[in-house]
Structures are given as C-alpha cells and as structure tokens.
Length: 368
Image 1 (spheres, rainbow, N blue to C red):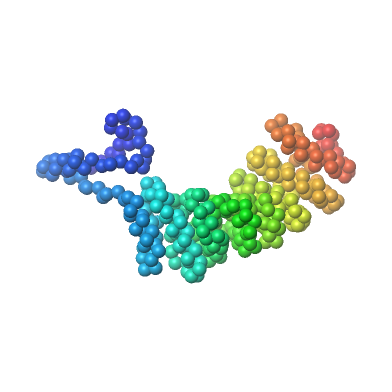
Image 2: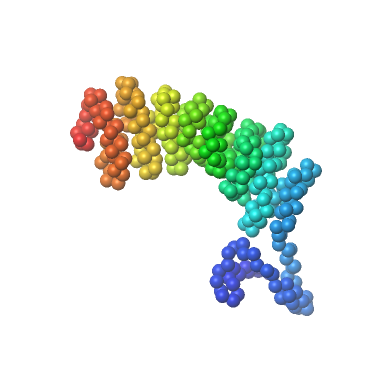
C-alpha cells in the first residue's frame, strides 16, 4: 500500500514545519483501524498503531543513565541513534541539558584516561550543536578541564580516526568561541601544539574539522602571548604548507587571517620569510580567492615590506611576482580605496630598489 505524507494543515491548508509537534487524533485512528478490519476480506490492510513519540522525560532518564558507569555506554548509543533520527529529538536534547551531560562525560573520560564511549559522545555533540550559552556556563564551572580533555582526545588513537578527531575539533572551536577574553589569555602551549599538529596532519581530520581548527586559532590570535606560542609551535610553517596543498576559499581566508596576526610579531615575520613558499603563496592568492583574502594578503605583505627591508627579501618579492600583482591590484576598479592605498604604500616604500629590475620599471610606469 502506498504511503502519503501530507505536510499541510487540513483546516488552513498552510504548510507545516517538517518536525511539527502535533497531537495525534487517536479516536479517528481507531475508527479507521476498525473499518480496515471489517473490510479485510476485500484486501484492505489494517494500518499499524504508531509508536508514541518521545517526550523530554525520556531524555532526562538517558542523562541519569549516562552518569552511571554500568549503563552509560548504552545511554550514549541511544542518544546517538535518537540525535540522528530527527530535529525534534535534537531540540529536546538541548532543552533537557544533554550537551552539558556529554561534556561532563568527556571530562570524566579524560580524568580516568578512558576513551570508551568518546566517539559516540562527540558525534552526538556535533549532531545537536553545543549552544554558546551552555558552553559559557560549562567553562565557568569546569574552568579549562574541557579544553584539556578535548586536546587529550586529539592525541588519542581511534577507529575511524578522522571522524572522531574532526568532531573533537568542532567541539573545541565552540568552546573557544564561548570563552571569555580572560580565559583565552590563559591558554597554554599544549593547546597550540596540538592544533598545529592537526594542521600538519591533514589526513587526520575532515575539511570541516580543519576549518574548525583554524577558526579556533584565529579567535586566540589577538593576544600577543598566544601569537608567540603559535610561532613556537611551528604554526607559521604549518599554515603555509597547508595553503600550498589545500585550496579552498574559507580555508584560505582563515589561513591568511592567522598569518596576518602572526606577522605582527618579529618572530612570526622571521618564520614567514624563512619559508620558501611564504611570499609566493600569499602573492598568488591576491585577486584569485575573495575580497577578504585580498585584504589579508595585502596586509601581510605590508607588514613584511615594512619591517623586512633586506635586499634578499625585496628581490624575492620581485621574483615571486609580488610587485607585479600589487601594481595589477591598483588598476582594478573594484579594489577598495583603502586597499589601493595600502598597496601603493608598499610599492612606494621600496620604489628605488625595485626600479633596478627592468621588467618592474616598466610596470611602475603604468601605475605612477
């Protein structure tokens, strides 16, 4: 028998949301079932009685089971199944405090050095998404334990590894987004070392997980202490290598955003220039990705040209096409005025040196 699913209100004929919380008409169902039974001889199949929909009390019970060592794995498996089933279940999970219960479970795993159930807990968290308000409260109650726990997860071995570690990074990004400025100022070297490790091992996380790791770093960038720890962890080289290998719009914007912050400090600029692909990849992305990428790339070049005026550095900017690309940017009508001004400032700061190159001298004549 064919099944038809009407998603319109029978009275107003207005479309209903996919997960509408409707009250079933049990009397009408029983009448229809009775009619089906009476006409069974005519080939009419009796419609089944639908299972009652879950309410919040069911999820409160699962939270209690999650806190009991003997039943927590079964509770996690049930939550995993229900979270994947529909939006209604995910909504109830958030309203009953499942995200907090799962975060507590992850912290307990870290303290007991046990990875049993971690994959399910992280998968459910990604399904239901941790509300920022709950994340803030959890950080206040548990301080940095959840950050340490998620960093620990990134260092564990799982099967399948990509899924679990990607989910851990996504949860970590949410917690960093919810963190206060005071909390972000107290981040420790292991946080940056592990995130940098994720950037270096691109096969251990998904593209979504990679972007989440980059986003977490970008949030932490405004503090000089954090930038120094990123540089010491090898983040500059890891970011350049990542951009050389992965070309995706959002990833590029995040990488250039972080590199800009790191190039604000002397150690960051030194690391950037010591990598043979740094200037080349930043130059190449100008006018190829997005206005946001153009903005960040030009500001990186501005920092480099301002603080690094050595002949080898200036020659490299000619060799990789930086000077030519900046001149081209000035001639594009859609380039923002402030960006043209920044590009012009870079060119003027070393005009005398760059004019020594015949090919560049001709390009300058078109611009000035």
